[in-house]
Length: 265
Image (tube, rainbow, N blue to C red; front, side, top):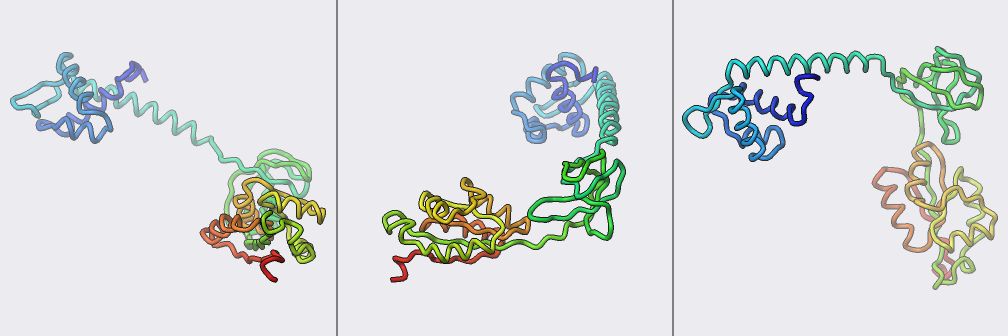
């Protein structure tokens, strides 16, 4: 953009254009508010535009009018901006959003595929009658990540449920006073397991539970549930509140199992 190449030229062009559209009575504050700059900046630029013969100052503080040279300057800069914008739009017409998935089978460039979730993972396979669809950008073998474009439709997905197992704090006896047998039963019906707190780690170790996430557990549990996974979260005492509040806010179904033996006596 030759006309607006120098630093500050774009601001000067905007101020000049505002004067042209508002003349002859132009309040500097109105221009400043419109462009998001200070009144001082507008005032200094107007003085410069007057000195260059692009703007005339009439009677009164708010009386300004662009000159013939000013009008030519606006047209030149506007045309420059239009050409630049056209170039950008033309280049963006070739841009395509690209999304990743796992190839359910060998896929070739140009294949029409359908998308589905399984075990919380997004897969792509040759289209049958799936609600969500896309087009393959590059060949991919089964199990590889595949690049997709032209996404459309909706991925059918039923949200999972989160079960929160509340364990006693260390002052209540910790994992020694937790109903570990009940915890073992709960662990069998879930796709992912998360823990919150040291006592939860100890309880998981005692039962040889596979822990899928230990840090930022509320966020991870929510994300997993949204992907259709059933999640078990081991939480110590009041730690459970941080996850229940997040699940309620997002409308994810959950239940709480109190495994503190000291609370049941």
